[in-house]
Amino acid sequence: MLRTNRYQSCVDTHQLFTETDITFRLLKQFKTFAVTNRLRGSEEEIFVKNPPKDTPWCIVAWIMHECDEIRLDGTLQPESEVRSSYSHAQKMRAAMTYGFGRYIGLSSKMPWQESAASPDTYIGNPSVSEPVSSFMLGLGKRKVARGEVPTNLLRLYQFNTVAHSPDDTETNWAGPTTRLLAQAIYTIAFVCLLRIDEALKIQVHDIQLTNDMEIQPFYLYMFPSEMAHLCPVHALAAYLEHTRIDTGYLFRKIDKRDRSIIQKNEPMSSEVFLEIFRTNLLAYGTHSFRRGDICEWGGWNTEFTHLTIVKYLISWNDNAMLSCSEFFDLNRAPTTKCWICGRSCHCA
Image (cartoon, rainbow, N blue to C red; front, top):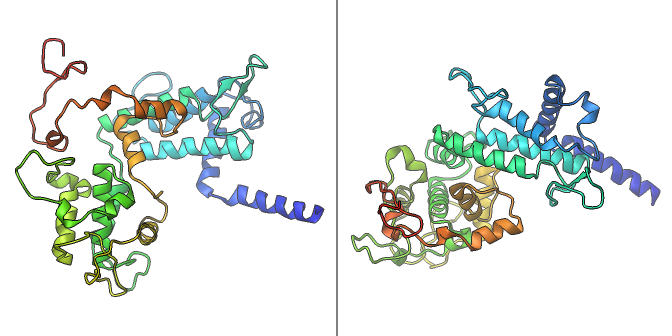
């Protein structure tokens, strides 16, 4: 038994220090930053069992220093100085959550809060705290305002729509049918907030080319060329032109020769698509585009606490101020509407 425990300890320690090199590089950078900027006296004072009250603000200062346009002294960064992306900021925060969670043992499921039993003592993971969450939310909005956009779908689109060398087994992961199918599912799931199994059940008769504005629930328009990586109309048109599927399920099973199996009207299973998804993205999460989209579109914290679920279920945003036909119409005239009555009136 003792030998088993010793081996288990060795395995845990090995996993701890080899799980991701980038995580520990970020942890080391945080230590250096905290000591250099005199937030802590030494590196030994950083990752401790009982972090000080200001630990969340130290995390905010570090991310702000690397990724925000605002300096720590409140002045703006010069335009010539390139800041790290919001995606990198998320990695920095994830490293902090990991460091205090896995390395120190502070639960990331417990928000950072003052202990009721011991005043001036804080429990939980400081990375999962209101100051850090609020800062990340504001940083995300500032990045979007400056033109930074999520790059996951853009990179997928660029990767899946260019020719790759047949000899390169890493980039030439699938044939054109599989690539077009994947891209079509990515975009329609992203834009329409669908789970993968919902997207796979779409049939040809569910799609209509019409000017009738009574069709629900989704009115999809062709996006401009600079948004082609997000355009389900563009992706579906390319996929249907290639496969010539005109009845039944859109996303059929694909044989070993990269051909859609049209003899049987059966959709691709979630498990098969999941394998395609993993192969295509390698390091991207799966199951649903809905959660990430709602968080990003609504500007929410990506940590689903009970309060976030309440906000998801009960919100003034549930009373749509636009008709379904206007959601994706990028050419509609901009208007200012009152969020109370929904009209363009004097109270707006």
